[in-house]
Length: 216
Image (cartoon, rainbow, N blue to C red; front, side):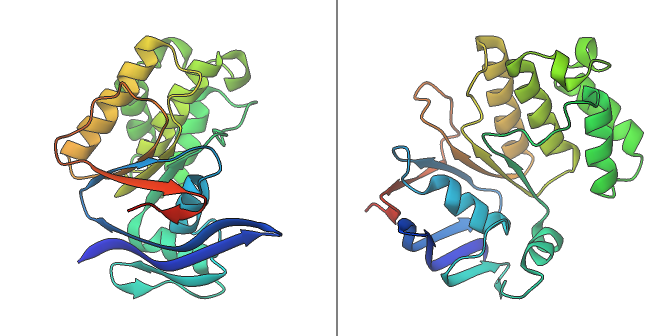
C-alpha cells in the first residue's frame, strides 16, 4: 500500500492554476525526485501532501485514509510524521541553533529531547555554531540547521524543496549524504531540486511537472 497518494489533485491561487488533476503515488521507504521549471507546481504539491494547503479538488490519502476535514493538517501530522524544508527555513532567528533544534524536538514529543538535540548537533557538524543565534549564522549554516531540524523529529517522510540553495560545496555534500543515509534507514524522501550533480539511490523515481501537470 502507498504511504501517500494524491488523486486528481487541483489547486488554484486566484487566476493562477498551480496544480491540475495531479496524481502521484509515494510508497513507504521510496526516494522520489521531483523535477520541473519554476512555477511547475512542485512546491504546491509538497504543501498539499504535507497538509499545509488544502486542495480545491481531488483526494489526498495517507496510508489509504482520505484526509479531508477541518483538522486536515493535524490528521496528516498524526498519520505519518512528515518534515518539510522549504525555501524559508522556518526557524527562529533570535534563538540559537541548539535552542531551535531542542524546540523542534519538544514540539515533536520526542523522548529525551535534549539527548536527541545533542545527537543532531553532532551528526550535522553544528557544534561550532550550536550556541550562536541563528541570525548570526551564514545562509548556508542556517540551511544546515534547518535540515537538522527536519530530522530531529524522527520523520517517516521528508519533503525537501530546493534544499541545496545557498549551500557551499561542503554543506551540499553533507546534506546529500544525510538524505542517502536517511533513505537507507527507511525514511521516505521527496526531493524537489534543479541541481543536476546530485547522487541518487539506484531505485530513485523521477516525477516531472510542468504548468501544474505531471508529464508522461
